[in-house]
Image (cartoon, rainbow, N blue to C red; front, side):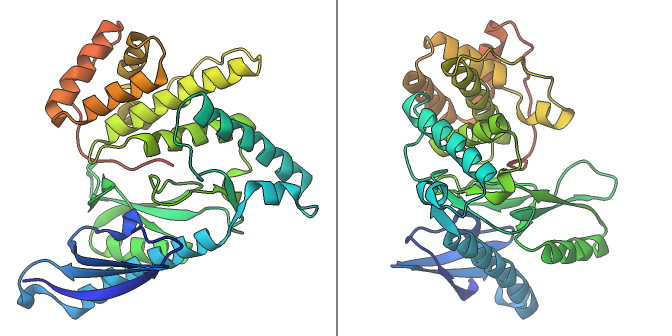
Length: 331
C-alpha cells in the first residue's frame, strides 16, 4: 500500500520533467497531464506505519524546488533571433549568440542531431550557475550515494536551484556521517523533454566550448540509455569530438588535438574509442552510426560492454571489460 501527496507543477507544455518522475525512496503513483499543468502523485514506499509525515514533507519540498526552478528557467527563455535583434543586447553577447546559432544549425544539418527548439532560445538567469549539485559518499568511501529516476536513470547527485538550499541539504547529509561536496553547474540537459536554452551561465565560455556543449547535449537527446553513464557519456563525447572536428573543417580551421582526459572524465568516457571505430565502420554516415548506437543500447548491459570492448579492441585501443555504478551527467 502506498500513501502519497499531490504536487502540482506548472509547465509550458504537458510533458513531465524528468527530475520530477521519481527519486530515491519516492514512487510516482499517478500522473495527470493538463494544458499548462502537470499533477503528479508521489508516495513513500513501504507500509503505512513506515511512512512519516516529516519524510513526505522533505521529499515533496525537494520536488517543489525542482518544479519552481525549472518553471522559472522556462519562463526566462527568449528566441535567439529576438535577443540578437534587440538593440539593447550587449554586442559581445550578440556575437556569441550569432556563433551559437550557426553551430546549432550545423548540428542538425550536418551531424543529424535533433532538429528541435533546444539551443535556439536564450535565458538570462542573473546568477553564476543554473543549479548546485550535492554529491555524497559514505565516510572514507569512493562509492557515491545514488538517486534513481525512471527516465534519466541513476545519478550520483541531487540538484538544487538555490545555493542556500544545496548547502542546507549538504549540512544534513554531513550530520548523517556522509562526506559531501557541493558544486555549481553551468548547464544541463532535460534530454529533450523541454527546449533547453543557451543560458547566460554558458556565455562566458569560449566560442568553441559553447559549440561542443551544444553538440554533446543534443547527442544525449538523440539517444540515451538508463543506468549506463559510461555508454551515454562516451557516445555524447564522441559526437562532440567528431562534430567539433567537422565544424572546424567546415570553417577552414585545422583540427585540434585532443588533450588527455582527467581521471574522472577518463572513467565516464571509457568507450569513446569504440564509438570512433563504429563511426569508421559505417563510413562516417551519421544516420547509420546512430542506428548502430541504438542497436547497442538495446542489448543487455553485459552484452553491450562486450560489444563495445570488441569495437575498441579492433581499433587497436585498450578495451575495458568492467564498469561500475551510476554517475552524474557532468553538464
